[in-house]
Length: 162
Image (cartoon, rainbow, N blue to C red):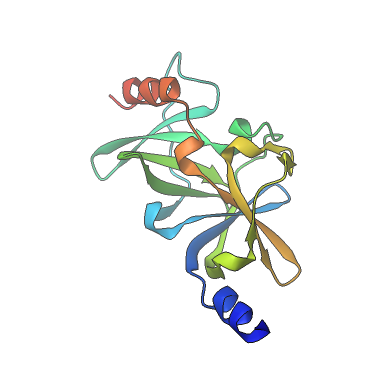
């Protein structure tokens, strides 16, 4: 009986994630949503855009809005350094970039090691969080990019990127 239970747990789905650092936290997003990872580029400010939008970049002829995840999550701002990256993702068929402190690695995480999020994780509200994964002694916060922006904010981004 115990063997069957173990097989079910280990036979679970593997999640493929891109992990990155933001403040003291380690976060993961579904690798299928990530289009590319870039070093910091010149960001053009856009008047009257939401405060968590740093502006837009021109990426091979495409205008892409840039979301500052530190601002979005209410974390203190930090100077960009050589580790800072822009992670370009596709969220609800919209391309946007997210500024992160550093990209760590691509991980495979058994879905059985993911637990539902507690109400508050690393100062970030659980509405943006899919779950918390355990890797050795570390915790990896899995972001739900589909909930990162409200529908009103998504509409605002469409105007920013035009």
